[in-house]
Every structure is written in structure tokens, then in C-alpha cells.
Image 1 (cartoon, rainbow, N blue to C red):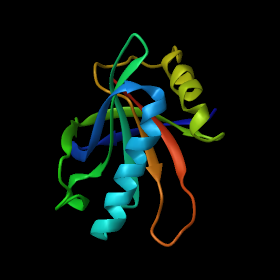
Image 2 (image 1 turned 120 degrees about the horizontal axis):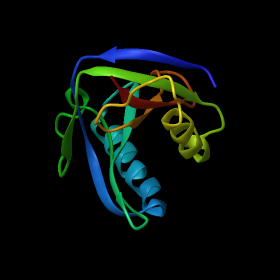
Image 3 (image 1 turned 90 degrees about the horizontal axis):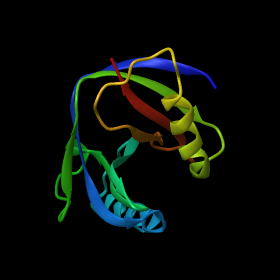
Length: 139
């Protein structure tokens, strides 16, 4: 698995959150995508942020950069802090996201910092499909 290091300036993700089993996450994405279409927004990336896990239940946010989400209602905002991240592309689709996170977290060559990891879905306007990356905060 190839990785790269990225430094980002802080940015805000705005979207929909849930507390529940992983099986509820696709419904959250369906809602986000419905509202994106309804509002005519045109983000070229979206984010899935696991804010916590407890006994098989996830606290998860599916969203887009806040400047593309004006007029969205009943949303939550979450700040991605500035800093470095180790990044890897997910080759096998959504079902391979946990394996990529686990591989990054076992990397002995980096020191992790306290922050949230996230999925980044890259979907340029005018293209079909999307690419998935996993981002984990490092020192």
C-alpha cells in the first residue's frame, strides 16, 4: 500500500451525523447526496468522519466542506484541525476502508497525534464514480 504525507490547514465539514450501527451509515450518505442534489451544490470531495465508537455503535458524520453546504438544514459542523496526515488510497471500495485504516494505524514509521481520522471521497464534477482515501493524523 502506497502512502503519502499531507499537511492541511484547518477546514470545517458540514453534514449529517448519526449514532448507531455501521449499517446506518449508508442512509446518512443517501441523505447527504439527496440534499446536495436538491440544493445544487457541486463539491468535488466529501468526508466521512468517525467521531467515536462504543460497543459496535458509531458516532459518524458524512459531510462536505462548509462553504459548499450553505442552506443545508439540520446539519452539524466539525472542524478538521491543521496538521499532518498520513494518507492511503482505498483500492477495493467502501468495504476495504477498515483494512486501510488498520494498516495505517500499524505503521511503525509514524507517530500519531490525537485527532480524528477520516475518509475522503474524491468526485470531480462531470465524472462518474469516486476515489476513496483514508487520512490519519500524525505528528
